[in-house]
Length: 225
Image 1: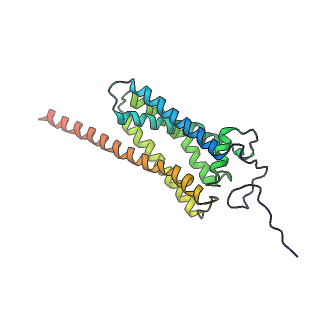
Image 2: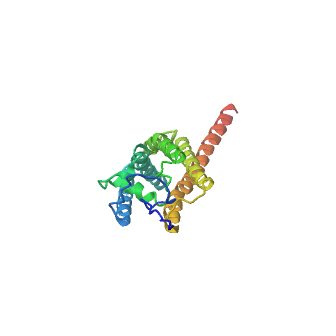
Image 3: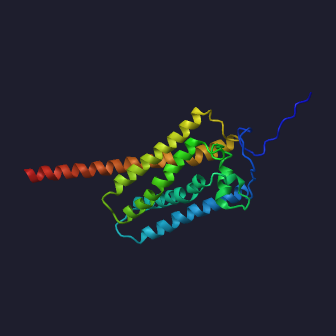
């Protein structure tokens, strides 16, 4: 008796992942990445131009505003679609956000498979870090006193969420990408920025907060004398 090998109905790993009514991507990889790159550059550019009209903002502040605008909109638009669209892989219209997650799932099939840990991390990111990131844009632009505390808190959440995301992947076997390119370019490359940049912002915010507290303490001692 000759055993027949069942051909998977989707391109993801593991091949036995059950995704009924899966619809392949309508857009090519280049098209998906080009739109994402254009949108990202547009957000950064517009925020940079807008921040240039504000007084007393350093270039670092302007860069941070651009980062928080980008990451906030990423959380609220791109990631919220994933959280609230459990069957995005069935999308037939070629809707861009669905195409993004179909493509990214080639690097981490837990997204297509609705892994509970991934959905949980993304859900918290959307609900908390998305709005707070946009609040950070306002806080920096308005030079609010809570700006550094807010940036530290958001960055800590992003750092924790990304490390948890990688850690759960390792504990589950770290075998969710279809090949090395998707693993390193998408899974490691795109998510790695949410470890590097938040860590840098946390370090800067910590120094700013510490300096402010130290200055306040010195002022109190001077008044007492």
